[in-house]
Length: 324
Image (tube, rainbow, N blue to C red; front, side, top):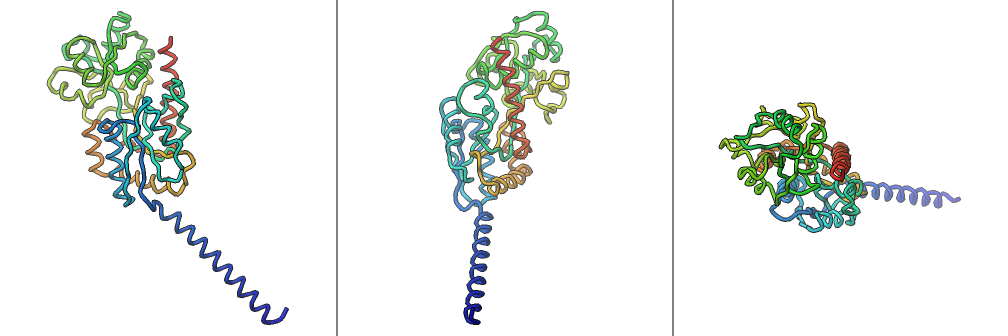
């Protein structure tokens, strides 16, 4: 080969290498740029509901960090399944997010819809709330042990208010009663306010319900908290024991988390997870959750996925008990 030919060949190779290097840098820059556009977030419950408000509190903080608009879309129906199905079918590119909450584990064991935890990538948890066992202040039960001992002596005599059979209050009640060895009748109501009205009206003897809506009644001396179904005591009601403390392995922490369709790029998930860690510690975020009766849930993606799987295992047990 001539000297001129050799020189041209070297110039071609050098130019090609430079182009490849520039391409690699461009690809790296593209990956690091997430998000490049606005994001849609699917919430499967109606506007103004607990899941919707919690989602908007978190996504509002996320917008500030990502500097992109996050549009929350309320896709309701089918007991939440339509929203989950919509998110499941979306392109896994990081631009569709979804509220993964404590109802997601129920679909498979209850045979409600072809939706499961593994249809989504868990990115992080951000909030949770746990049920509390409530009785009237004039009831004979001063402690949870008092109630358990009495219920054991009088099977099915006492009525406990929940919202729906197989729902977020009924399942932990079933697990708790089985663990403690007593039987009680579950009576359903439309929501937490209706539960409390029924308790004060002496239509039921106790409730399994959320803590926050009943705090005013506790302070007015109308109702009493007997036990908490979280992993640790509530910060405000430190004298109220957890069910687990009393020897019953029942922990029900209904979570809210950020997820995406299965197969979302790792780069996008890493950006979102890093933002979540920052949001957990924001005083404004914590204060906003507290107004809803929620607490911050500091869980990364793998931990949150494991939490949902544990809930699903508990739901399998609860469903089996309900059917017996």
